[in-house]
Image (cartoon, rainbow, N blue to C red; front, side):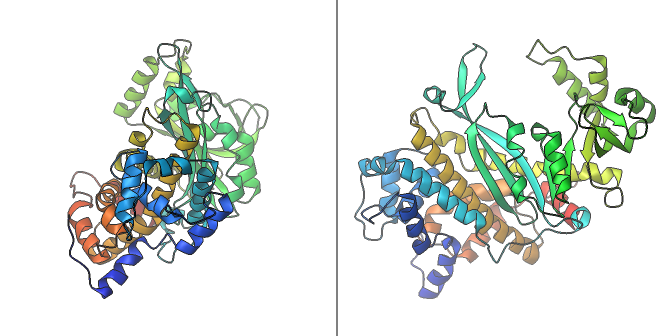
Length: 447
C-alpha cells in the first residue's frame, strides 16, 4: 500500500507508534553488549528494524535482511548480506538479550491493570508455561530433543515464559533445550513472586517444594494435580482414594495433605467433566504411543474429573471459581499460537539455520518484537477499541495485521488513526450468538 506524504503534525503522531526503540538507549545497550562499538553502515536501530521488516514477511535470509535495512535507511546507502553475516556474533545475541530485558522491565503509561472479579484479591496474576520450536538436525547437540518414530533424536528449543496477566506484560523468558526439565524451571521464576501474587502453572511445572515456597512468600498458586501425586486425609493421615470418593460424590472441595513424603497442606478441588470431554480424554489415553504406559482402572476413572490443588481459601474462591480461574491459562496458549501463526516464528528457523548463534539471535529478536507488539500495539489498541467502540480486538488477527503494515509503521507513513481504522475492519472478534469469544471470557473473569 503506497501512502501519501504526511503533514508534520501527522508525522509527529505516527512516530509515537514505533517510538519504543529509543536510539540513545539502543546504542548504549549495543556498546554494553559488545555488539557494535562504532556506528558504521549498520547501526543497532537499523539492525533491529531491518529484522522486524524481514521477519514480518516470514523470510529469514541475510540478503533479505540487508534489503529491508536499505528500505528503512533514509540516506539510501544500502548494506550487503556479508555485512549482516559479519554482525552475527555472540555480541549480537547479547545485544538482543539486553534489549529484550530492557523492554520487559520498561514501564509504559498505557498499560492497563486487569484487577477485579475473581482476581481482585491478588496484586499480580502470573501464568507460567513453555512452548517448543523444531530446529534443524545439525543443532541437536546444542538443543537435544526427543526421539522421532525412527528413534532419531531431534533438535528442539524450548521457550519458557512468565506472563503477568494483570499488567499484560512478560516478566521472564528462558531459552533452553527440550531436554531441560520444566520441574527445574519451576524454581526460576520464584524471584518474581511477591506477597499477594497468584501463580497459575501448567502441570509440567508441578514441584511440591516450589509450591510450598510460594505459600511461604505469602503468595498463592493454582495448578492441576498430577496423577501420581498422592493425597492424604488431613485428620487421620490416611491415603485418600480419589477415584472411589469421586464416584460417590461427583465433586470434592476439601483440605488435604499432598505428597507421600512432604505432606503439604493444600486445598483440593475436583469437578466432573462433561461426558464428551471425559470420553475424549479416555480415547487419547488408550491411543498413547508409549506402549510402556499401562494405565490402571483408577487412572481412567480420574480422567472423568479435573482436579486442582491450590492454597487460595474458600473465602476468596468458590469451587467453580477455582476451575474458572484455571481457564485463564488459555491466554498463554493463544499467545503461543500468535507467535507461531501470526508472526511466522516457525518459518524463520528454516533448514538453512544451522548455526547456534544465528538461531539464538533470531529467537531473541522475535521475542523482542513480540514484547513490543504486546505492550505497544495490542494493549494500547485493545483498551482504546473497547473503551471507544465497545469491541474486542483479537490477538491473532492484530498480529497478522501488524505484520502487514510493519513497513509503514517503521517508516512513519501510517498514523495511529489510520491503523485504528484497519483494526476495526480486520482485527476484531466476530460476533457469535452461540458462545462468547476468548476476550469476553477474560474480561468477565476480571470485571
